[in-house]
Amino acid sequence: MHKRALLTAVAALALFVAGCTMPPPDPGGGGTSTTTTTIDPGPPTAVAGASPTVGFAPLTVDFDSSGSLPGTGTGLTYTWDFGDGSPTETGQTTSHNYTTVGTFQARLTLTNSAGTSVSPPITVTVTADPNPKYYVRNSGTTGPSCGPKLNPCSTIQEAQANAVANGVKIVRVAGGSYTGPLSVVSNMEISGGWLQDFSDLGANEVTSIFGTASAAPVTLNGVTNSKVVGISAQGVARTSGDAVGLVVSSGSTAVTIGDAAGPLTVIGGGQGPHATGILVTGGSNVGVVNAKVNSGTTIGSGRSAYGIRVLGLSVVNVQLSEVTAQPGVAGVSATAGAPGQAAGGGDGGRGNNACGASCGGGGGG
Image 1 (tube, rainbow, N blue to C red):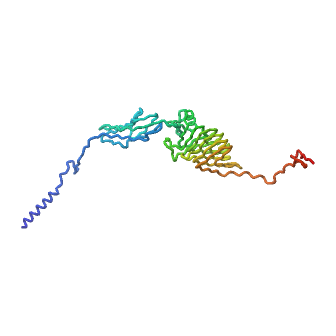
Image 2: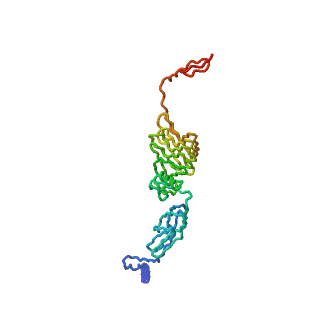
Image 3: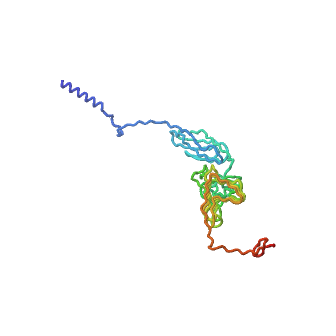
């Protein structure tokens, strides 16, 4: 009995050991084995996106390939055809300026070692602007050809002159500081506060026009149907003349300063005699809308300060605006003592009064 029990125990132990036997070591010495799955190469899938796809010429369109699939091939390339006959461009994203009016089909082509894919076309529609505009930014150029969106002028004065020469009635000005004086002509709108690419108005873009020691920043003299909106016209310390931020004179009519739907227009008179934010004179007619007007600081005894000063039968209509005048300067007190006595008149009889020391009255009985 004891011998049979011992044999049974030995057999069980042998089975246990056999169940725990490890596989032979890897010939490479790593002790493990791996499985590799091979995936056949595949071509890419091209999907193009663009914004905006409709607008006035010149129209800048941004393109991207974010919806595309690269495939499993190698050497992936991106090629953009804009559909207007211009050279193709490469890259996952790009932009293109459409300078002519028309309808264009833009496509993206992806190519890798496994094949090529062409995206469905994107239709870009470019139309003529019914109200053409000229443009200004500090980094612009000069000369008779400056002003279009792709070649802005560096000064407002030159952009306005070129606009007049080409029948353009709107000048858009990017944020920045510009030197005056600016004399706005008839049938012209000067619009400030634009982004540097002019795609929209910028909340932080301020278009400032500064005056000089002898001139106001902005004047409108004998004009009609003119508008200034979204600019900050600021006078500086004056060495001659009154300190005025904006002057409308000589019977100007249909002049608008500011716009309810536009950015705030800010006017300041600077520092000098009779500091005035806006001076309207000579029978002019002006509307002030969505503006912040400050007289500036007046100097000289007996001088006043005016937020808006209206003279010579002029008419000003103010809406949705804030107008502030700084304190004036008191006049110099007269010397002490009684005023001098006037010369005595001649004797008057019981008739007409005397006319003065040189003649008596023409009295009768």
